[in-house]
Amino acid sequence: MPPIIELKTVSKCYENNHFSITALRNINLTVDKGEFLCIAGPSGSGKSTLLHITGILDTPSTGTVLINNQATEKLSRTAAAVFRRYHIGFIFQKFNLIPVLTAFENVEYILTLQHKTAEQRKRDVEKVLDAVGLSQFMHQKTNTLSGGQQQRVAVARAMVANPPIIIADEPTGSLDSVTGSALIDLFASINKQQSTTFIFSSHDPKIIQRANRIINLRDGEINLYG
Image 1 (cartoon, rainbow, N blue to C red):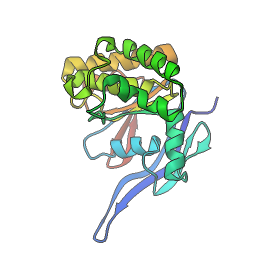
Image 2 (tube, rainbow, N blue to C red):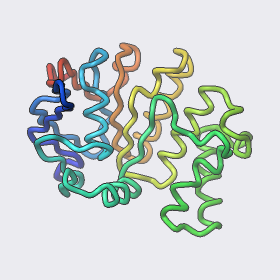
Image 3 (cartoon, rainbow, N blue to C red):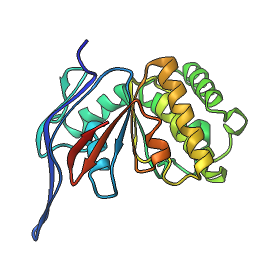
Image 4 (cartoon, helix red, strand yellow):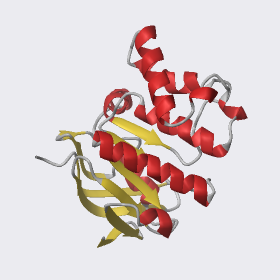
């Protein structure tokens, strides 16, 4: 079976009129379906850039990004957004929820974009909010929820369309250690039960050790395979 994700000689350079910064250098990486993979490394090592490029939120300066054997690096912004909608769930460190909407409405939004019926949306959103332990909070606005609850809403939003890939950028970075560990437990459960491919970044040793495979980044390069 071919890898679900493949990066071939991917580099990323940010430039302005005065200087350039190379965030990634010649990254070669394959990820198999169902992996539980951690991208580890210190701040500034290129973790977020690598995840954003893998999740088609950004494009490489050079190189190829294949997802399900489809090249994605030259997709237009609109085409990339549509591709993500059906293939990738993304969980951000700062949640990126819409505070004036309820937990239900935040999770429902992607299903609306997929043109699911109201009945389908209700069924799927209630199911996934129950799975993350938030059934009793589904009609509360997210700005009234705790940090851990907001992160679970973000997880539910990433899960609700059943994407084959979920990418999480420092998902425990703003959580206390107990809540962070519980979140990784949830990821591991989803990974095991549904064979969802998880790629998450962290610099927390307690979180890193939960991964099935570890990729270490340093100065934009893969330093060591764990």
